[in-house]
Image (cartoon, rainbow, N blue to C red; front, top):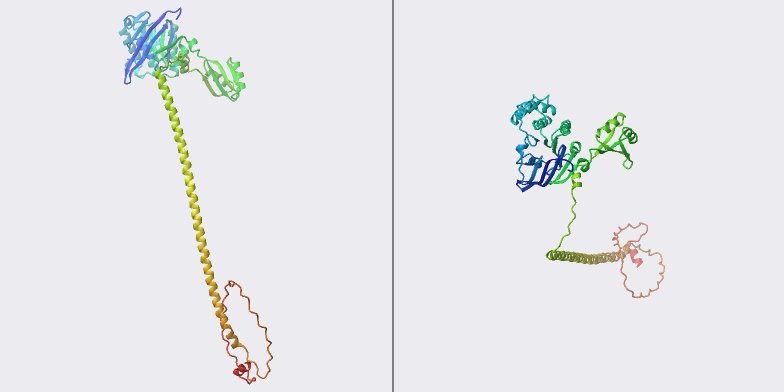
Length: 472
């Protein structure tokens, strides 16, 4: 960077690894510049090459190509000359769990030729004096990370390299380790950290390099690339008007959004918890408090260069292939249209044939019904005629028996009384022949029973035979 010395510089750095799927690129053409003094953050998403870069700088991995210089000394050839100027917290540490924290540091100091008095000094710097006599196996993750930092500081290095300083730590441990790194930078040390936490880079770093796929997207001042750590906070509560008045009186920049029910937007907030504390003092309690931060993925997406599409030159062979593909598509469309038309016609024919069959079946059923009705009518007529003939025969038989019974039942005339002359009835004229009319069947009259002969009165003096002769 202009006007500043360079603590770390790389040019065209390359590194790849073997895997089951072939070669995996760690970094590719990495050009990095870290200024002397302050905190510099290597920021990127997982797989961007942060940890690989730190391993190459500290000699834990060998580069496939490119150049590295630390304080102007080529690496890895000049690492022996830089042994006392570089401290690193990368990967797993080699502490013994059964030994105390002070004993582990004492062994490291003896191996590096560092005075024993330096052990207590670095323990105090990382706030581990009270836990110095405890076994390392009883340390928490935060305490273990701080002991590793103390080990890196034994030789009083000019460059401290730390990979993921807040990984696995709780909120308190994260704050303490960040404060320790910030204090070292304020004392003139150069601190290089690799992190995937955007807020961590915003809070402790002075400069930053944003990595993506092993390449440098951008590097410069944190405020220029990432903005400061202040955010806008969305606040919802039951009394937005009163809350806005209280927050403005406390020095917050408040905007009231009437479009979504009086939601408050508080700009330029460093610590969102301050809003809750300020409102709670006035008996105003929030139902929602959401910091609206730009995440790391959005930063990387914003910094990625947008390459303008290059015009593609199409060869004659490609033109022919495109033309043939278009012709095939057109032929397929025509074939599909013809098939749909044929299917439609076949369906129409099938419908017409079904209708014709149904009509024929209906006509056949009607003819059968009509024939059956005619047979039934003829049968009924024959039965009626038979019944009429039987009735007529019965009537004639009844008529032939009726005069004889009447002659038997007629009274015998008295011979002593003169008989009155019978008027002669005119002879009826012969009736004209007419068409015989069908006679309705008449009910047959029951045969009259012969009457029993009544005894003659004793005073008449004539017998029945004599009356009969007198009548003749």
